[in-house]
Each structure stands twice: as structure tokens, then as C-alpha cells.
Image (cartoon, rainbow, N blue to C red; front, side, top):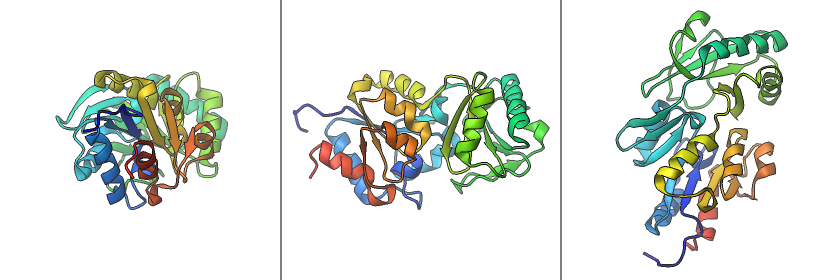
Length: 271
């Protein structure tokens, strides 16, 4: 192991559109780069909008057994022990008020709810369709069942508005009640107010003994903006949303072109 100072002690990567390819796997080149970086002494942490239960199959597939930040920061998850270190839930009364305000502004929504806990299901109300993560089953329920049990977040969709338009409309009428973010195609989320990926990442980093300045972060969507503001260096993927590209320190190539590996190889002198 080299004794030279590491450029960064923590590598934080989003999953979908970043660490994962379009086929939802990690390329051999990216695996090799992360392996080399951790062999030098740096740590790798996954920071994803997916819940811990939804993230677990991916972590098992890539052999990841460290700490992961899941659910947009709501869950700090020990993958090796398969246990939640922290778990934050959405106030269901506030969520119901927020939904009502948003629907009064834009019309009827399709809504889904992510139940709390490691085994929490995603409950899908009428018309809701998940567009990524085909391995995650949705359980159809009636609208009155969506908030019947503790939830970590809600997903909303609109039949006509774009994701950006929906997120903006939701923020304008309900941003004082809940957090609102756009995490992917068709995935606008309502979260506990103040909760972001940066919230969970800062908690996890403290457990790992690493500071924000020692962190390099990779992402592709607007939900990664707070993480970029927190980290010492933020790298947007070539396929990233324009809002993330605008705050990034660097834009690499896309997730299907080994964008994470390209930067790690250069920054850590792997090639």
C-alpha cells in the first residue's frame, strides 16, 4: 500500500445512472478502479435514493458489505450486517396535506408510498408505474392504504407535466411542508422536510472518520445536488441532468462509458 497522501479518503457514488450501467450492473473497469482505490486506503460508500430493501439485491450482486446511505438519506444501512443504523420516516399527516395542496394546484396524481423498514414494500396507488429498477415489485393498493403504515417517502407522477414541471409545482405549494426532489425518470419524491442525500452522507462519513473535504462524490440527478454541495469535489456523469451539471466541479463521460472509473483512474493515479 502506498504511503503517499490520498487525494480523497472517501468515494461516494450514486447507483442508478452513475455506478450502474443501463443494464443495472457495474462494469469490470469500474469494479477494478474501485478495488484499486480501496486497496490504497480510501473508502467507498454508496449513496442512493433507493430504499435499503431495494438497494440490497444490487449490493449483494456487487459484493458490497459496507455502509450505504439509502432512501435519499433517510436510511444509513450496514450492508454487511443487514441492519439499519438510522431510519427517518415521513410525517403522514403532513404528507396528506402536501398531496392535497399539490393536487389542488396541478390536478390528480398517481401516488406510491415506500414503507419504512428493511422489508418495507412500495405500495402503488392507481396509475402509478415505476420506470427503473425492474427487480422491485410494486403492490397495488387503494389510495386510502398508501399512508396507513409508516413510510419513508412518497412518489408522485402526473399524466401531463414533465418531472421538472411537477417538482417545481410541488415545491411552490408544498415546499414548506415536505422535501421535494427529482431522482430519475418518473420519480418525483416527497420526503421529510430537510432530508437530503447530504444528511445521510454526513452521518455515515462521521462514522467512518472522514470529512466533507476528503470526499469525492459522483451522481447524475437533481437529488445529488445537496451531496455535491457537501462534498469536497462533485463529479456529474455525462448523462447527468442539467441542474446537477451546473453545480458540478467536473463532468465525466456517461455511466455506460465507465465515467466513474475514468475519473478515479486519473485522480488516484491508477493508470
